[in-house]
Image (cartoon, rainbow, N blue to C red):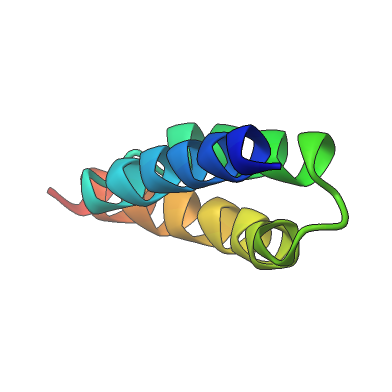
Length: 68
């Protein structure tokens, strides 16, 4: 159980760090992994919500890149 929690938290930390770096598709990858590997965990519920957000943020990032 402890090893499982450690893995979830590691993946979640990676996802959050990717978001901070504006690497939304990388963050999405980590969130999908959490949702797939640990579907019943509370973190998976958060991850599923964040997956859709990552698509929206990626589109917004592309829009701003075109404006520059």
